[in-house]
Image (cartoon, rainbow, N blue to C red; front, side):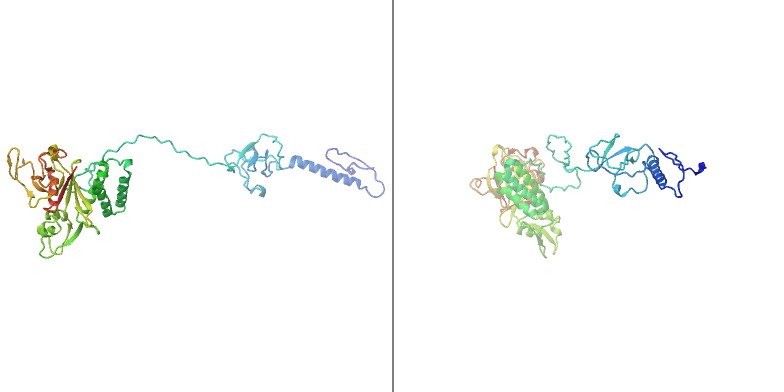
Length: 441
C-alpha cells in the first residue's frame, strides 16, 4: 500500500495531484518534466507580479509627441524620498532635472513610448533651456529722454575765481561773443583752424591766423566774429606780449642781453618802444638793470586802428613780413556830430605830455596840471595828419576824460577819448613819429 508521504505535491495555479502505480522497475520521465515546467512558470509569474523593481527603474530620456529631444516627460513622485546619490546609468548621464521641483523625477516606464500615442497619465512638460535656431535677438530701445528747449547760457563771471588769470591792466575785458552764424562758414572755418592750433599748443601760428582775420579781412567779419577773435587774441597777448617769457620763433618779441654801460632808455629806443613799457613787462625799474641781465623787448613800433562804428581802438605790431600782429583792444569816445576825421595820422614829434595843462577853446577856461577837473586827464598824445584828408587838420589828439559815460559816445570836440587806466598803456606803447593811428568807419 502506498503511503501519503510518498505522493508528490505541486503548488501553483492549475496544479493537481496525480497518483500512479509503479510499473516495472524505472519511473517515467514525464512527471519530472511537468514539475520543472510548473516551477519555472510559477517563479516567473511571482517575480513579475510582486518582486519586479518598478520604483527603482532607471529613468531614460525619450521623445513625446514628436517634441525635440530636450523636452522630457515625467510624473511627480508621491514620496519625499530624495533622489538617489549613486551615479545614473550611462544612457542618462546627460539628463537635466529641475532643481526647483518639490520632488525628484520618477519615470513611468523604462521603455520608449510610441511617438504617435498620448501618455496614459497627465504629464508635465519641462523645456530645457535651448535657444532656437532661428531666434532673433531683441533690440533694446533707448529709454525715453525728456527733450527740453535749448537755453542760451548766461555769460560766466570768473571775477570771483581765485585761479582765474588777471587781465593785463589797460586791456579791456571783452563781452562774450555771439554764436557764429551758418552763413559765415568761411570765416568760421578759419576761426576753427585757429582754435585747433591753440589746442595743439601752437600759439604763434594761431595768433597769425586770427590777426590776419581781424586786420586783413575786417570787412568780411560780422560783429560776432570780431568779438570772438579779439577775445582769443587778448588771451594770447597777455601771454606772448605782456609777460616776461619769449617763445622761440616769435617775430615781435626777443631777449636783449644787457651789456656794461647800457641804459634802459637807449635800449628801448633802439627797438622803437618806450622804456616804461619794458619796465612793466620785465617788472624791473630802469635803475635796477645790470650787465648780463636778459630783458624781454618788443620789436616796435606799435600802431593803432580806430573803428568809429564800434568805438574801439585795436593796437598792433608789424612782424618781419609786415603782417599785423594783434596786441590789445580799448574802448574809446569820439567827437560830437561825427567830428573825428577819418584817415591816417602819426604821433606828432615831441607832442606827448604827462600831466598837461589845457585851455578850453570855447570858453577860454584854463585847467592847470594836477587839476582833477582837467577834462583831458593825465596824458596827451598829439596827432599829425598824414594823408589828403588829415594833413591840414590841427589840434587833434588822444587824451583822457573826466566823463566816463562819454566812452562809446560822440561827446568830445573831435579828439579820441580814453579811460584813464587804458590811456596809461597807450601812452607807453605809442612813440613819436613812428607810431601811426588810422581812423576808419
